[in-house]
Picture 1 (cartoon, rainbow, N blue to C red):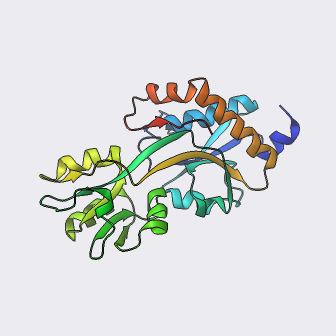
Picture 2 (cartoon, rainbow, N blue to C red):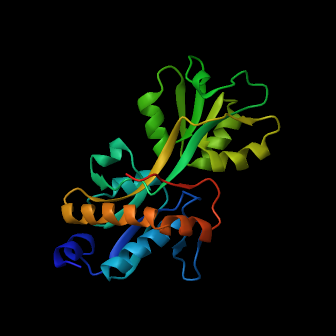
Length: 241
């Protein structure tokens, strides 16, 4: 492993991996020592092993906070949804996994399809600064986005304010829909949230190494193995870049 690469990606001698703790598909638990466990921590550890350095996890409550810390010398790699707004500061690999994002509608709703949601008078509950919120912000033309801080808060607001739709990742909505008699999850997806590995824009050699590593880990079944190990439903290995 080249010295330049180690200097870029592990300047402290340890790979500091930022983990979004709010993504329950990618972080499925904690170890006895308190470290996050799941698909994204496993991938971060595999990257550190390839570099020949230890890994140290840097947990963040939300993806927005993780992205905000880019360039502040807090983390060396960040595992997060790749979005254009974040790519202004972060050099991303191609996605290693994808997660369908869709809507849930309440009992009695006349809405039957995803295309019907973006209409005047429709209010969409959404977890603020999630990857799918960033997509909706760019693409919703007529409906109104109603943001709350976190997944539970957006569900609570959807219920309390009798909003017309709740945006979310399909696996989470499959849980939420069981709490609301008559509620439905719409078929299809409005986007697929692409989870990638990012590093500082200045890390040219590091970014190239990470991109190559992710493609290899998808192709050789390693990412699929992480998904199986943690028994995650709703995650798919992303296609080749």
